[in-house]
Image (tube, rainbow, N blue to C red; front, side):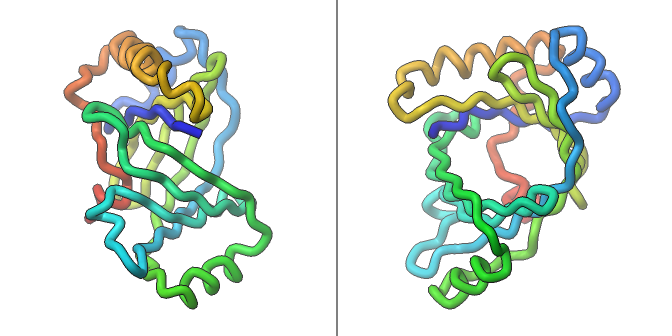
Length: 176
């Protein structure tokens, strides 16, 4: 799967929500997420622009690999995600294999959806409030990537947010 994503920091959450609703987005849910990231045992993921995490999504757990970013504008990248039953056992397996855990990222995420576009408003502990716009496609649809990225950029423009506000760093990178 390829996740085409753009992210911006926002100061005016309520205004953005109202604009999203006027553009046809519907509120889906609000949830807590904790992401536990790991660094490679044989390579530094900061240098290779990869990510490996365990996500606690309101008590449902996933392990996710994210490949390097595919362009210079967005956070578009390959994403492979699998649901797991036991977060702590998966955490232990990764540690036993030599992966190094870093402090978790915690956030409250509000999800809005219009068609196949997801707008998430994230209140990230210690970092502030962000808007993420994303759409996922299969690996075989990679030729549609630029078209979809332009669709997300047009949506950003409709929200009166300049594309120079786009942040390509992950929350983990932003935290430093």
